Image (cartoon, rainbow, N blue to C red):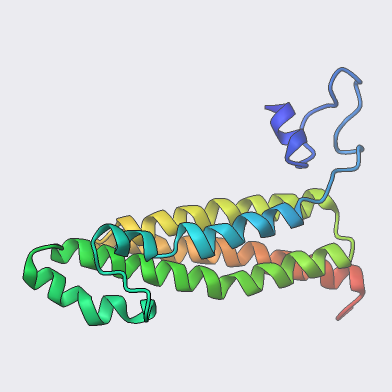
Length: 178
């Protein structure tokens, strides 16, 4: 576990056989990798195009309106169930939410890196954000029960909280407000 923590730059455990604490060993800032992952997560993995193609309602001419223009007709024709259509709609919403949220992540990681916030803090916040946003995506797309859907809001705040934490740490480093 210490090796994984070390590889992630979390600063837990001790160095490999050196007896030195990783807390005293500089960690590498993984902001660029986190941004790359979240770009692919938001723009590729959560994009509803794949689900729309599987169910035959994807049209290249104007794909943003496929669900609205062709969803109900596919349900009426029996090529798509109402539950499948609602899942595609939730995937579309998760995609747009992740795209919108990407700007906050870019700003938080960018400003924290620019302000030279400790790499372990950046990496930890990025890992919390990643876990929350991946769970958020799965919950948004796969859970349709109103009671359990509330967990989506909790995950959204955890992810945003990690970004707000980085902005706060950056403001401390930059001497803002104090």
